[in-house]
Length: 493
Image (tube, rainbow, N blue to C red):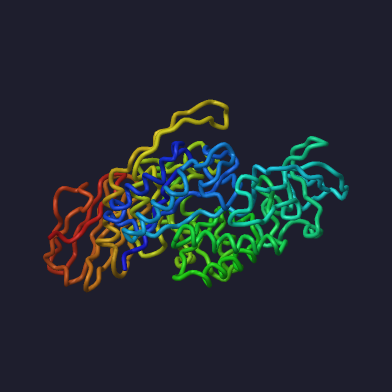
């Protein structure tokens, strides 16, 4: 079996105009050829902003670009036919398809309702004002254009626990809705930031309503029939009770023909919180290693002042490699986004080598790093910035190297603050490699490869080092890398 290698096939500023699904179809063969095993696609259903929606302002889960809603038939990425064609093209090349799931809120309601609400302290959601008052809120989703096709479920205020905007009186804030399910406040088993982080945005879905949880399980079954995906990426799970996703994942796996790959986004830099969530869902999902991504960000900013020997300390992949999905960047961490923590281009080859060529974790490649990206947006200071995210020249070779050489037992030499190395021993069927990297001056390490490697000649697969290295009669060799760079040494043919 190939080493699992995921590609996030979008970014926040991907161009409008129904281009992504056709691009996925066109690139399917190339992705398979370089070693991508699974593609993570963005939310495929209609958002509040229609054809301009990145997908996280979820409106209608059952509209995959089929109905003229929110100003367009197609989503930002294309229509339903183009989506299905993209999935078929990827699956034909044995590339799995992971669909994004946004279940913590809905936006763009069709109607207002009279509701009873409590004001809540936005900075501590456990502080709920006991006064109950009446207001109007956008909480009714009837999907009049779809008109009951695929699902007749109507969402109303009983399906939601809170909103951030009310009318009559007109106010913005965090308001807890009073209904049959919210008497005890917010949902439990969510992150404790701001007291209780159940509420995030929009009309906040309340999973204590059994009709809601059954509808979301039904939707998963429908989605798997409409789009033969091989996995799901679960958005913003820190705002969703863990008990719900444990049930939902159980249901998905029970009805799936083959085990589904499930990865969840619990964006926290505290490893204890990630491990707690994994425990709450009984290990049924993997999580993105947010602490490691932040370490890559810091290492890229600090240069030689950063201690590379500690790059994996207090990360999920260090504490629980079997549930860690490792990333260098994603749509939230890219420049000008909410969790902005970009990794400087010079360090990205080092970071990708550390996630693609090691044993631990399942790595994800980010679209702009493989294909590039260019965009403009407003920063937090109100100024407009032009952002260029260049193609990382070594990335395609590193993805290939993962399939060709990242095999066998791993040995580490994380014994210097600026120069570290690790090796993969290879197997009887597949060769291994030696990876050495430096965030400071040119680096070198004298490493024992074993007597079986005596006299073997090694070359740098990335081409950064032009001279081959030959092991001595004991199988020992001196491996080098350039300053602020990485080399991947493999036995020369």
